[in-house]
Image (cartoon, rainbow, N blue to C red; front, side, top):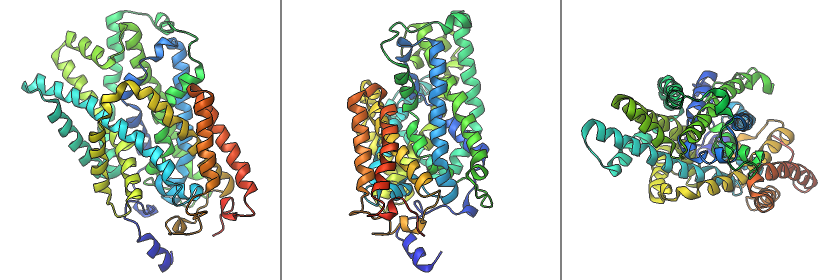
Length: 458
């Protein structure tokens, strides 16, 4: 890298600089563990609680497998940007959207994460407060929330490697407790697998399968969109020049980390709904465990707290801190983490839980088109190449028109709006292909006037 390019990099803090190959520490198994920690998301118990009203458990099994596969493949599509170039999501978007235009998809990536961070923190703080009551007779949800958020902030400050190490330690505990909760449902309700598979679907036909898949995608698709935030810290074989050679091990790790475990934990919550007739899944499990023993109740509350540590750090807090550092270039990573945590507390998203399904669908509408435009730009136009220093330049080659690739931004907004107004429930599957096809042909049409839109000239 030339001295001029090094000067360009110095305009940004260490957080946003590309991670050098020699500084990376995460292996394929570690990435799989990180994804396992992401999909064990307790908010999902509540978000998916309405699904058995529309579909049977058998149908939901298929829906979650398809939804988790789409989530995994979207993540795999984005991972090469991190592996090959060491770029975080906030800077990778500059190539397709422009220096200023990139702020729009970055905001779409970060804002829902702030919402989920706050909600997950509050839900787990309730469990932490229950632990305090059972162990010490102390009852104060505000103290539990403050302590929980402080611990989340501290853990995230250790970076992705620290999160990986923590998740490696707790993953066996999370899996064992998940399996025990499944056994607990069977032992309590004595329903055969055949009977269970046909339960649910009391309002069958009121929602399409595409709606169900969209909901399954909704919580995790933002993590897929920013998967290069994780893979930028993954060890890459620089001798491999092909996509397959560089990505195959990490792709396998992502598939294994996402599909079986996302499906299992989503179904676990849905089975509790159909068997108990209630949608407050965590309370259902707590009551069943209290009937067994106080120790088991303590263990499940511990499960809730630990599960959100692995999810909230990697899925929500860390990526949002990257975006905060991009919006405020002089902001350091640790201060970015604190800022995001403070914003989550100020917003108090747990107070608006009834609107979560709408918010999740709304942001999913605009997540799909962002992924589509970036993948068309990266694979079809740039052939996996970026002029990385130019991504950091003020008014560099990716400046476009006043810092905005107006073609990408207009198609991004238009495709999302079309999905929203044509069929909100199925908007992801409407907006995403429209964005991909429209951007491909529109960018080609503007190539003569703006070659950088489709040509990666070093």
